[in-house]
Amino acid sequence: MIMWNAELTKRLACTEKEKAALPGFVTGILDLADRLRAGGIKSLIGAELEKNQDILAYGLRMISEGLSPETLEEILAIYLATSTLTGYEFLVQCIYVEAILGIASGDSRDLLLRKLAPYCGAEKAFALLKAQEPQGPAETP
Image 1 (tube, rainbow, N blue to C red):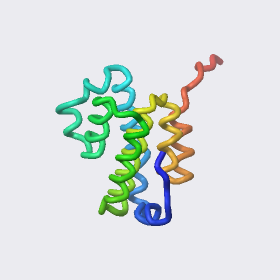
Image 2 (tube, helix red, strand yellow):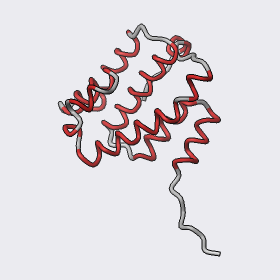
Image 3 (cartoon, rainbow, N blue to C red):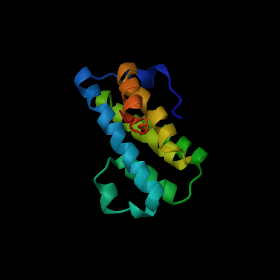
């Protein structure tokens, strides 16, 4: 889990339009995590990772190399602290880091969703959580 401080939090500020893209972005990460659970990290090394942010590729490679979640968290915390990004780009980077840490810890899709949804803002987080809830059996009239 990312340890927040005032300086990191200030760097997350972005527009409402940018925030509107976050629920779809989080859903994409959840789908990626599902593919990882099904096929393993090594199944994504190569072309698939090259399509993603450098931080995601970097983190998944470290997981595939067997780094412990604790070591991974230390390295990624330094990565965020030294990043020069701000705004939406920094927010995306933080979401990737949180996802990497969740994947390394073996989080379920539901737990990973609960960790990532708050980055979307309170209202969008609740909508995203509701949209991702499993649908019960259809009622017959």
